[in-house]
Amino acid sequence: MLTKRKKEKVIKDAAIHDTDTGSAEVQIAILSKRIEELTDHLKKNTKDKHSRRGLLQMVADRRTHLKYLENSDKKRYGAIVKKLNLKK
Image 1 (cartoon, rainbow, N blue to C red):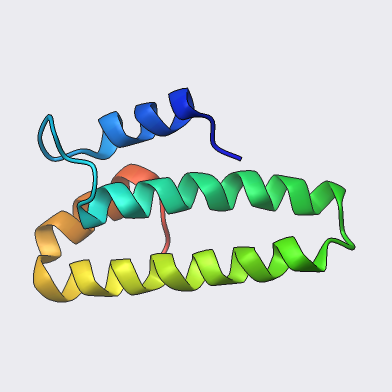
Image 2: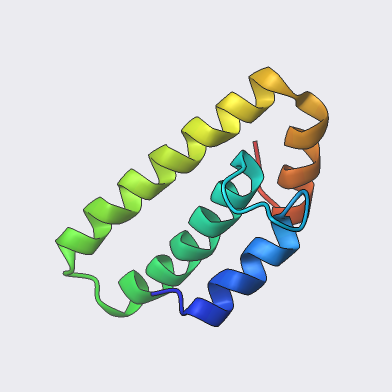
């Protein structure tokens, strides 16, 4: 689970401006961090099917945000994909 400090750091790194907390870039960055942490959890706890379902939902949500950003602004899309090291 993301702690408040980790989440604030992720938001600060991905924010477009100082008060940005909900742009597509920030949401993608937060989801990516949560996905990383949950993936580590599932490597240790292979039988945790409920968390696996949540992981799949987060991945789908991130994919939706990425698709929106790609369709609306390719420059911002390229920047966030490069910053988070996401493969297309």
